[in-house]
Length: 207
Image (cartoon, rainbow, N blue to C red; front, side):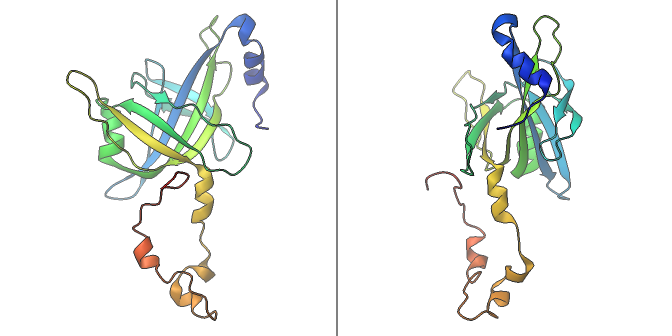
């Protein structure tokens, strides 16, 4: 079972009686195309830009990040599973928002790291009940752009694969090339790596 803070759990428990406002937060770490340097942008379902405390998806520490609002953010319902099954979700954003344009066209968002958080707000005070809790860790699998119909605003959809896929990318220096594997009799691992590295593998989905 996922551990959450006492304040977060108390807000959920009292939601029926006290009410609760839920907001989704998305934090994407892409790369500069020219240098490969990591660059990040945050978005949330609120209407203004805010600095928000969240639980870091990797370290578990509380960090403060800037999240941009008014980007028509929509996060698909996240599957709740207890095994290593690879899950995918769609994250939709406004196509005309300058920050979104920077993310998918100015930067390289392929395989960008994505953290999705859930922020709970007390409707009586308008304040967060505590740091936003992590609900999904993943990587971007492409950045398709939806073409709008006449007179309508287009949207950008990021397909995000759960971070379980990252476990498959860990390298072993003793088994990283065909030349290295040839030292082991009848071992053909890596023979065709020069070809398959360009394949588009639909991880977690039907081909």
